[in-house]
Image 1: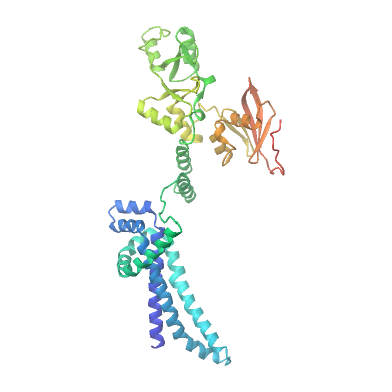
Image 2: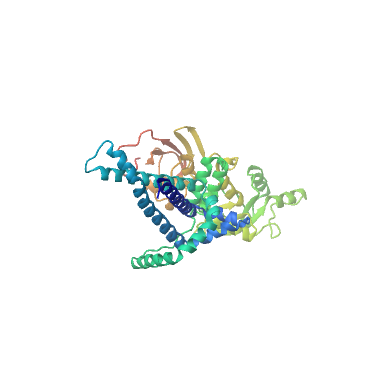
Length: 441
């Protein structure tokens, strides 16, 4: 064959190998989520790609058969086509025993470079740009190619499956999507500008509802405002005026003897009708939803939805009331820093770029967000910053007690009746060379 014929055949082989490389990367890299969207919009070829991904053994066997056959044939033809011309060129400068070897190396290098560039590197990089679009475009011709290669592909797959079973290799693809996968996609979307900062913040907080327990968002026991059955009318009026809540617990004598709750609207109606508001009875007191403190916020949302309630009492394993939680509390958790902090009372106050004043009752998840800390040590053992300090100090904290973690110093500022009211958190500009094993005090 002439040089032109050889070049034409090699060009065809390179194009064929390039098509197979392009197809291989596109079908492997096409994301199922996008393909399902295309399939639902009426694109039949997208469904064919999904079906091929579910059973990809025949395709990869056929692809490797084609790629290897083309590469071997291209090497044979290329070496025979170009070596005489390289030999003539080399003999103009050198006529020794190595002339044949040098011409072979030059011919081999040229053919290999052409296949690497045009049949491997460029097609694969193109396929990575838009894998779904390319996969849908090539699915029909590649299915014909798979049918042509099926007898040999079946034989190769049979041997491969035998070896996989022999070495107990699981070849089933795991397509389960984890929270880390979704979080990575959200981060990429935020960096690309597809998600606004607040949208990314909201979505992240929604996923955290499954991890955060009730105590991280509830109104704690000491802050619960409640009425007793024998409470004076003046006291009820004063509480209504002082605390702008829509619902109040009603207890027999103390907070642990809960009877139900009253809606502030019902009391307002009694006032407008000139009725006594301290005569709380069955027509006024409503049954209250009671939940354990071990529930996650996601589970609490399910309880609210199933019971049509928006207010619940939280009790611990000893049947003692530890707080109350409302639907609004959960929504504030989702909204985070973007909500107007009326009820939050500014739990985290940023003094400057390296220091914060933080209330001891602040949930640990909020601390991690504010300080950009990935995780706290053994955080399953506590819910709040005060709990973190007590867990690390192994004692009742006192003012000036400190704990160092993740290049931050947590210092107790104010303690009221053994309760940590406020802490000063400072970012250390330099990591201590040898952080103390035991917290200092």
